[in-house]
Length: 238
Image 1: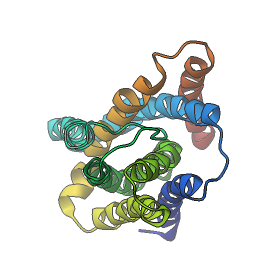
Image 2: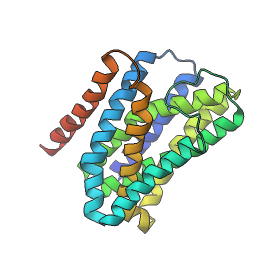
Image 3: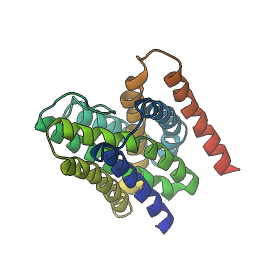
Image 4: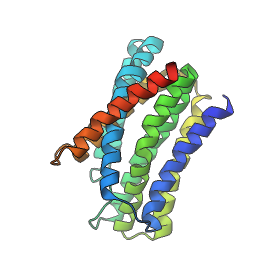
């Protein structure tokens, strides 16, 4: 695998750390901007999963690709909303127990590992697909890092441990990327798994974060995210 895909994986992992640092370093950041990023990310992720990742997974693996997509979808639901029912994308403002933070971290480690699998398996198909998948992933990495670090802080952990939680997500992403090229089953079914995970994060994690809020700003950001996918795909194919 060339060094270029590695650069994308490293950038995706770094976004987790930046999100964590925004909380642990008490940097000033805009709640409104974060909400818009979540909505935009949701539109982009849903579009790329349905229009590019899933069709390519079916083309490569047939029915087993579809089964892998279902398993990816179920995996995220189990890790983020069964093992860690309290988790949501955004800053945690209520006090929680340490076990809640740890269970959320375990769930997100599995999810971010698959993020790395997604980037690696997409680049195995083409540079265009790899770049689109990277964009879909990196858009939600910052709020993801922010969410886990703020959850640790709310559970009483110090700023260092909260930052390390975000760093661990980045490491898991790199691990998924590294392992994919060395495990035949991940190389074969990684796209299907990624399709299910990407769809779940976009439709079942991110959309509920803003769909009940009033006003047009966040709803517009969601459709802009879909439009950005088409613009990015068109630009890379031209």
